[in-house]
Image (cartoon, rainbow, N blue to C red):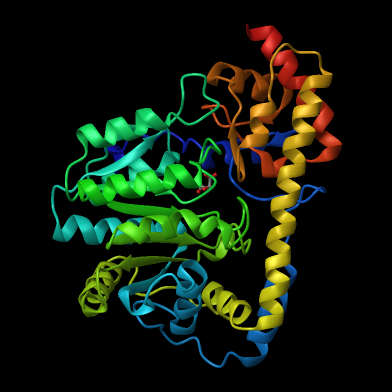
Length: 398
Ligand code: LMR
């Protein structure tokens, strides 16, 4: 049977990282997958994570199975981190998942099983994996307008008109709480308030991908759009990831959280999430969640972790400024200052797939074919090479 299997195309993001790893050129630069790098170009383990792991090594006394929904102390701490005092935590049915991707899939599976035919609206563009995850679960994925024609700002009126006209009660709408992936373009708080009103009016349900908490304006600040949605909408699904803000990429730790209109619904919601998990990966891995729980439940470690997140965010912001200045210095007739208005790891550079190929083939610089660049992968010592290569690319291809 397996002789009939065709070769699947490489993943549009992770496939490029594989190609990068095989590239023998010494000066190569990887700005593809969303992984934070230090000035020296490494992705280190956070100091707080190391400390928590040492504590874990000394205190952990079992590798027995976890409950289906995961590590209970972790879940309590995560619900606190995400929702703060904005709602009764009893309204939240939360389960630990393997990363943010696992959270999106569990949430989608649960919805697809109980509400067949549900649609989930995706921003155009969105993270390359969103469509695949939701479609694999059986949801339809219409798209709403997001990016302006010049690709540097939000087409807010287009987005609102689109959802107002074509959205139906019971539709889910996938939103990036902060640091929109791939564009780095987020609505303002005023715009979030309007989005929230629109969903309440249309009875559409926000499905919030919260993968970059702390990378936009700060851990608490980045949750404000979510609070705006919660203020008007009784039901919300939130998917958190701790790959980025704890640097726990390969530990695969996240959470799916279903907010119901009142706490009496939570038990049923959790029981259905448990079922979705049980027939998928049965119960989650322990290590990443134990690590996060130790940090969030220890005031000193938590404060230290906050500072580590602040430092990562500030470095990304510095790289944005340095890149804009570097591009100016090349003398190229293109303004990249829009990058400073964008948030998080990613920006749309405005480069096209042909230019992405040129950069890869001619200079060993890897960016995603859509023009998305991982700003968090930039470093001062390679900035001049990067900017000059992009300028050369633009000259050679336009
Ligand atoms: C990205 O968009 O690069 C990250 O979210 C990593 C991934 O899995 O694609």
